[in-house]
Image (cartoon, rainbow, N blue to C red; front, side):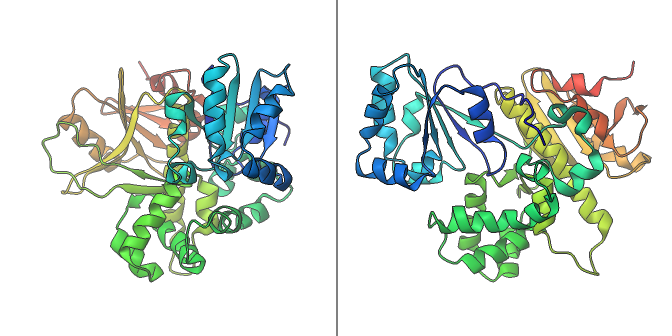
Length: 390
């Protein structure tokens, strides 16, 4: 696949750019800053040089007087280098640093404070449908996901199958993030059954045969690596009692499918439904992140069993979004949205489904999910992707 323009529009000053492997960080940086001084910490000779003498970075900057931008790739491999970066930012205000990495976990553990706010934290996500344009195919996205590394590979299926192994080998093992790699591999499979469902740590611990405390650490590791997210419960000023367990999602639906074991007892519709929810969430996350993280994303579930998949809450935004993996809408599909709107009359309801027609039922717009994803743009409000029927 040729290089596609990304919607990502970072801060004007120095910034960190974190994101899972293969989401296009390095490609975007090279395209956006072709004349920058590029310090690649994946090069062992460069890494060893700066490990021995972090101040050598200043000499490199002095040797590239024409470069106003310094790119440090895989910055988490040498957190100590940030002390020199901090000094250079303060002493040379016209110099801009762009620091990429797959996780801030190691940086935080070494006591470095991410430059005390002198560099903004940005995140890169898989492709959005609007970035792919006419190349976006819903059925393919639900099977292969939208990670640029996968979509651009000669054989996407093979690349997907090796993606988890890549993290085990290059991220988790190389950085010494876990002691028991076989236990972590079992955990990745066990938690895949929780994708799109309330997360029960005790059940996952039992399934992968490790202690509950260890599983909690593994989940935090997935979040730090931006491979997974815990979606909290929406609880603002509600009268109905809600559940307390967050829901879990892998960051990309293709990665989820590649890790999720399947067998004769699995129902395809169940996996397809979880995949569709995950695809919508990864778009909502990118929409929010690229738009300045102005909204809170959550879900709503009462102890009585009513559940709405996603709540988008922020300035001038209060949407309750239900996702249905069905081509036909039944009255019961709208039941939870109606209940939520009774609880929160200020909210707006939206049902996304696999059909082809835009409808309105009980004053709730019902929009084909492919149309919604193609229209969702970080520089526009969520309502622009809904286009309510008058």
